[in-house]
Image 1: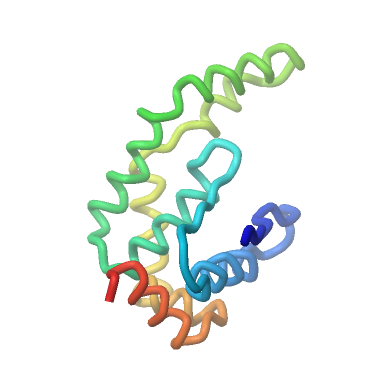
Image 2: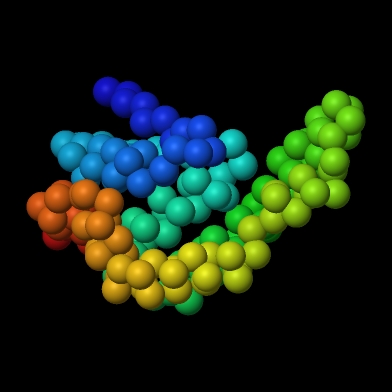
Length: 144
């Protein structure tokens, strides 16, 4: 079965409900694999991956390294996006900055989550994800 969870709310809309829905869907999948992605595979995908890794108790250093690895894996995609932007008269210099995935971005994100919520699990609870779903997600990720 294929289920789709949109993660592209208007900029003024809080993203927490979308994050909660996506992670709840992953937690409640009965069997099989789960695929999640976005256009470049770094921002929306990166935050979902970081939260999943956090639930699995992966260290911040490893999560940050995983996010930063994206830059090595998408150069062809970045080139394509910049060419399209250039052809449409876009500001490719600014756009190129948006297409980066520096380690500091994820490090700051995780730091803010910890400062405001104590942990990834605390963040998930704060956005309304039930504890049983968080535990179910952790069990799946750790194959328990």
